[in-house]
Amino acid sequence: MNFAEQYKTDLLDAIALIDTSQVDRAIQWFDDARSASKHIFVCGNGGSASTASHFACDIVKGASFNRPVRFRIMALTDSLPTLTAYSNDVSYECVFAEQLKNFAEPGDLVMAISGSGNSPNVLRAVEYANSIGCKTIALTGRDGGKLGPLAQLNLQVPVPHMGRIEDAHMIICHMIAYRFMDS
Image 1: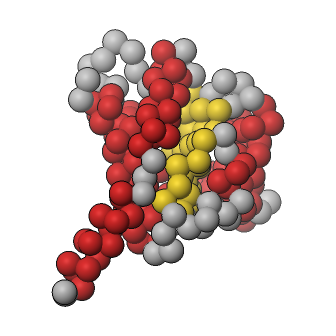
Image 2: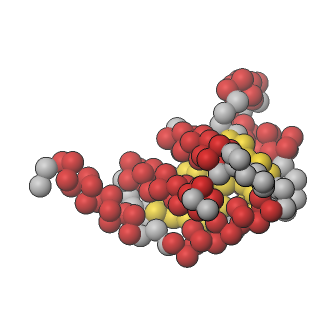
């Protein structure tokens, strides 16, 4: 089997491990947040930051355009000046939690994406969100790290390969987004 075929086979095996009942629960939380006009925040680092931004775009445009009820979602990864100011002047660990302190309110939804589940800035964001009464969803990989048990809902891809974890996280995000885009 060539490399591409092996990667595809391994990715399909990883996708098969996604607990779709938990994804359905996340979809319900997104629907509840939209219906109640709550804010949704999403964050991550590296590839997970890209997933967060991509997901927010899918929800802001694809799941909201020309619809009577719209999502109020923001990727905390998208304000480069804010990220670099906090990183330079305070610490990288606070870049997401400090933004949540400006915008998040009880009942809002925070989705944190981390393949390792151990990114300190993502952990701080979920800790803060939990402390003020937000609902929290984690997208994790491997053993879930510290983030898995910290979030109220953990969508875990329990494989060791970061690329396949990131691929599966994007698929989970599309499962959520297309629930609202296709309806």
